[in-house]
Image 1 (spheres, rainbow, N blue to C red):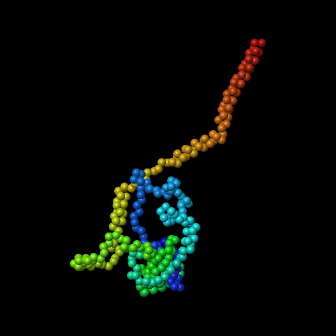
Image 2: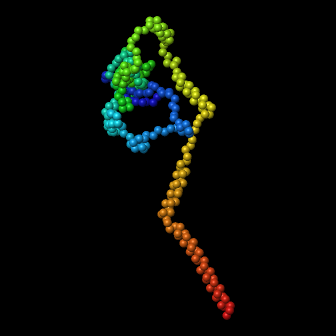
Length: 297
């Protein structure tokens, strides 16, 4: 298992080095959103609607909207200082209570607690004490920059920590609409309902319950794969080829501007070679004329 957090459990003067591990594994089937036209995964951009431009992470700050449209901006340094002030690598047990005292609505997320280096003996002592006393510890811990309330208890042969909600995080049940008040119930109907409950009463065995939708979704996906119904996103146009041609053309234009005399120089050489040919011909004509004069004399 991957260690999520290292620290210690403290109660009284006892301090036990520990490591936290996730006790829950998310089994949800992850489905991605694709463009139906080309089956390319959809991208989500961080865009400012006011400036109408995409915003990078370095341009994003945190803010709290205290009234509609008004924000208090909190910079990274302020948040970092607050985090360092509050963060304590300790699961501090402040009370011991009975498990039945806490309604399940308060429970949030479970973590396995393992002993840290040289913490095996103290770990076993706490585990045995919790088992014999049939008590659980109420503790405070700071994780991911958030202070949380938690309970520490024994599960099978392991100590577990379960984060629980603070009272003000649990909404008031009186806010639920249309809940009937206490009304008179027909005795015969009540006895029939109780009889049905008795018939369905059994010991809780978690292995008997399965996520039927998840298994059916996996089966559907496997079926489509076996039938070669997989889709490959269409390839985007090769922009790099266009860019390469543009770069080459730009290079040629740049070279022309740097060396404007090169074509003219080439042209003058050609012209010069053409001018030299008639000179040779004229010299030849003079020699011919001299030969003719000697012959006539």
